[in-house]
Amino acid sequence: SPRINIAIDGPAGAGKSTVARKVASALRYIYIDTGAMYRAVTLKVLESGLSTEDNEGVGRLADGLDIVLLPGAESQRVLVNGEDVTSRIRTLDINRNVSYVARLADVRSRMAELQRRMALEKGVVMDGRDIGTHVLPDAELKVFLTATPRERAKRRFLELDPNEGITLEQLEKEITERDRLDQERNIAPLLQAHDALLLDSTGKTVDEVAEEIVQWGLAAV
Ligand code: C5P
Image 1: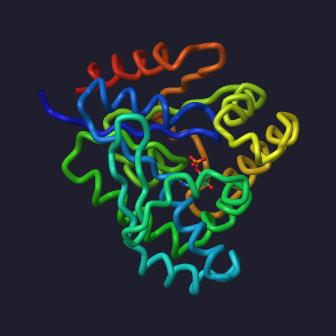
Image 2: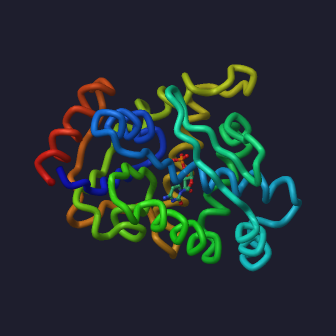
């Protein structure tokens, strides 16, 4: 059967990546985690000492990065200029800086260009913040995945290294702040596309949510 593109957007911790990976594997599609790309750029920005306000400098840096997403059974590996940064992009330090890097115009246009190229042949499940609204406005299926802030914080809490030493309450605050930054930025803010289906994952299992999206996907072909 013909392949389609599926866009899954939503706030932090809504379960997008876990769900998107399941949907992709059920349909034998390719899963693309666009948040990982912004995280990878952020890691390099922090290493380089550039300011997260420096649009041109950070844009030039991003242009020179070869970002590769390798599909894996459990998690996707992320390579930047050949270096595996998979675990280094999942720290609180990256969480706290990524939304500042992600609001830079030159970074966003570079990432969107790479992401569109990855989706050219269809058969991708892409998750992020602006996939349905900007990156793939023609995606055949768009989902806006949400959950309550407490539930989202709990999920991210379980993923974090306990050595990071943050409480659930503090994490919930930081997640809410990141959502605010993502929603209020000028370019491609976090927003439900007018033609996206809203799915609240609060109280639902990953399998239930993934199955619902797979059924929508099959209906959209
Ligand atoms: O999905 P994840 O939490 O890994 O995304 C990290 C950050 O990357 C988001 O908070 C957002 O600032 C940025 N992002 C974005 N556009 C996307 C995906 C992620 O701006 N399509």
